[in-house]
Image (cartoon, rainbow, N blue to C red):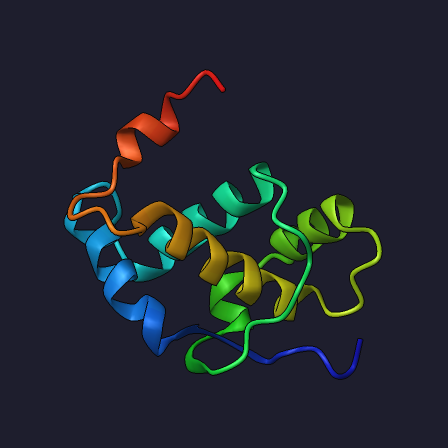
Length: 115
């Protein structure tokens, strides 16, 4: 796992989508919104992958100070060899999915969905 990412980022294409999530008023920070998006993507069984072109945004120590998120990713994706790279992918895929083309993403609806 020595090739794993040391920093996690958001693509330029997802930056405005991340801002839309923040504008819902449901998150205290961009990182909180990105972590929610990661959980949303994992819940929706987004396949493992890589995100190319992500700008550096957060150090993995800021994203996952306790290592618990890393362990969660490895539990959900047991074949993952680079859990932080996968986290970045899940964040970006989740942000894209949540924001979509909607002017105001329905974060509340996602939280209380019975699906």
